[in-house]
Length: 296
Ligand code: CDP
Image 1 (cartoon, rainbow, N blue to C red):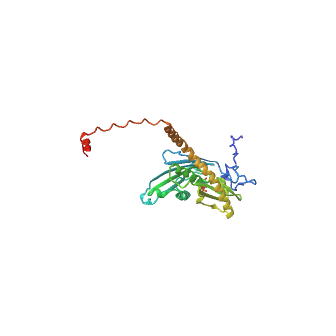
Image 2 (image 1 turned 120 degrees about the vertical axis):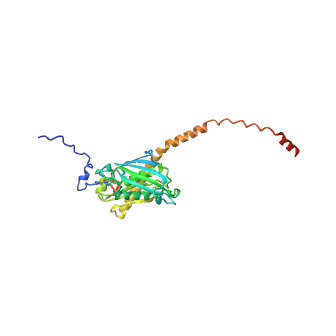
Image 3 (image 1 turned 135 degrees about the vertical axis):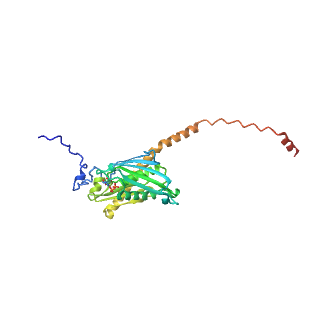
């Protein structure tokens, strides 16, 4: 008996990787990874600022197969009130992964991992926001991961940074994040899901590009001191490239309104000055006053 139409075999070697027990060779002898990247190559990053009308600031980011939305509200009165700090604003973050963001449906709601990621991201932003300018308020950051493919804390933080700037929150600088790690014995930049699953180490970090200050640093797995240095150099180099993408997103968002304002100012400057008004006629003279003056 002839069988029905057979399911076409996947041509993408990555597609069925979750069902393979032994890891594939993640990097070949020429230093090329499973998705074709070189050891120091970043996945494509794209950012749009100001994508949500109701939030004070927002950004949408795609980073390889990661898709992330970030929204910011504030500074606004902190609730519940007992959390208010009379000397500065609270910087609060909620990182959340949508149930449909991963292959196996993720149980909705907070878990240990999302609580941890929310905490480290809040702390990273608390280091750059001028919180003392807004006592008793909170700056609330929401990160929603719509599609996850490893590196979502870096992607979420990078998007949230643009959303904070879009909301006009005063900051010392943007924060930029990127991870490096080790696969098949080699230090590489920006691990994807398969590399994260089957690799040896993953080390996400976030920096303040203007000062070089590190505001988030975590490690999953083991790296020697030399490997750690190598990973840090890769991440710092990549963060500087991502910083430009963040700034470009903000420029694209605000350049049209800045151009419109400049054009309006130029038109105003070229317009002829309004005609001078004739001075008001002098008040009629009071004869009694004039007499008093004459008597002096
Ligand atoms: O995303 P990130 O690398 O910052 O954090 P992780 O804890 O190292 O998670 C790595 C990846 O595992 C995530 O990006 C998801 O693709 C995946 N993951 C998952 O499939 N299901 C979860 N409940 C959590 C993570």
